[in-house]
Amino acid sequence: MEPYKTAVDREMQRVVGEAAHTLKSYRPESPLSNLLTDIIRESVAARTGQPTDMAVMNIGGIRSLLEEGEITVGDIYQVCPFENNLAVAVLRGDVLLHLLEQIAACGGEGISGAELVITADGKLLQAKVGGRTVDSAREYRVATINYVVEGNDRMDAFKSASSVTQ
Image (tube, rainbow, N blue to C red; front, side, top):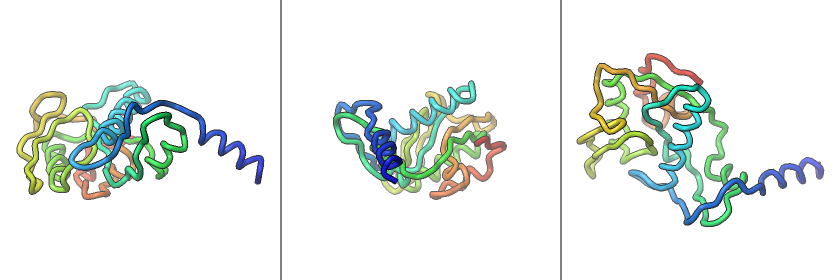
């Protein structure tokens, strides 16, 4: 086992970035949830060759913070320890609005590419995607992870997606 442990330890200690300050996760949005959803959105666009309108990450899936300083592969596994895959859901605008209402109702989730105005008691007052009011007839490409796209963490609007690619 020792050769395998040594190889795994070496990989987990590999530095992949640096944080200028400690990044934490909290609702309604946070530097860490913003970073992760930006990464999801950009990764899906790079993988599929198509841009996405927005990205969503459940706050409950973010299990640690990133300390100021060097970021290692091991740090990333502590922040996101689950074996999730990237996914893209195509949601009609009215379904997307329902999803954004669900996000507002729980006090917020990690999002990228969208702006929400919500009340303290979880009501959605305003939603914009790409700087524009959501068009209920338009289709939107939403990047996320497989756990969320399956409708988990109170985001069951994803179950009404017109298509899902994982």
